[in-house]
Image (cartoon, helix red, strand yellow):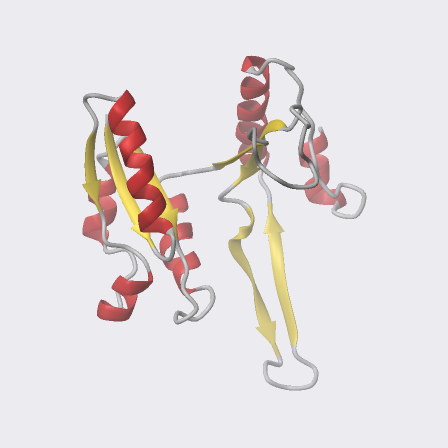
Length: 192
């Protein structure tokens, strides 16, 4: 297995280093390539994701990404130029967020073993398309819009992925969360 490693910023390099130790222990044929991408690269060079790095990343089976973001970089630069560019270029349409309460974790949900779920989010449509703009910028009458763009194709493939994942889980249960009551047009695609 070939993994592209993007340690990134903040705690990212630390957590990816530990994750690589675990992966190396369970995957003897693991091959990794480290990519210097994130705030420090942008600060040094002004580059976010060079085409050559993107092409190299395409040759890998997976990406291990630590964290991206730094207060020294204006908001949106790293997110759009690195994270969203990777998502769109690699068609990373499913955004997985596993949630599990681990034994020994102290908090208000202690003792609840039922907290074991996977949140499946759409990662290349909706608000991520960048469809919006500003009118009358800098005036008291400034108007800003962000349009959520959803396609039947995009919705189907994420819903299909979520159903397939649910079928492999012990509870075989799927819950869809959407604001269909107020986002009626986009919501109807999801609820159908």
